[in-house]
Length: 369
Image (cartoon, rainbow, N blue to C red; front, side, top):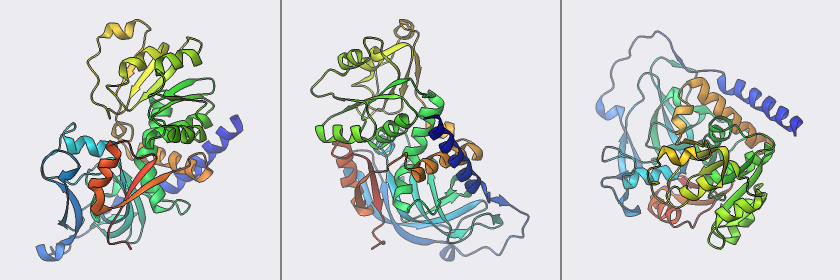
């Protein structure tokens, strides 16, 4: 196990060196003549939200995309990742000015480079996840420091499926609570996009993994992903099963993306000084928690956001480097179980919210045949 960990660290270090070179930077330059408004714009198809609501508010429209400015690149997307955070913005759980283009994850080719920018060139294949929002489109202007080069060992669909979910998994397992051999962890929605990666990565780190799922088919996948114990929460009370599995001790950490429906039970599953990591709320926002509820077992509670763990360029490159290294080494098996055309984004959201999906969901621009 230690040998595997050392090999993974070496692979991550090697890939990080690749990602670091070259780093985009600005050099002194003379501004070229300003382009006319018509020359500076290209048009493409995108999904826009004009009012909050259900999947039906995702409208497939033509939009204008400007030329990249200083420190920016324009990227033509090859694959776009769907994540539950997109639902939160669409429904108004998270706030954004209307109208907006949803989406926070994509991979594509650089089609234009802003003036004076070095380290990026037309034709580079790059990926991004997090800020800025707006990936549900055929082309997008992005800050050059927000994108990372994609290694040749990782195809575009896989990269789009793993960027946000993989980097989320990395900071959950390596920073919020550093999982090590001997730890027992509980992962809710173990067959979901992040849940699947959590199970695989935690298993590789030597942890005992308990996962909750809704169906027997998802239970099979969770087992394949490294779950030592799988709980069908519609058939069994997950709190009772966790206490049974751990002989009443509880788990060191709970990774909960469900929220309201599982929150109180998750607290009951924790051992003394356990960590409650709530990184999503697919069933709704949990009720407020009095500090006294944590004091009973000296518990820790956190509601982390990936952007706070990839706030600097170095943090972004390191996190992406570890993710791509684990994909290349086979630690992470990226399941792209569902692909939709960009114009079918509403159906993709409906399926996601109905829990008809497992693994990763990808949008492919309609212009790609």
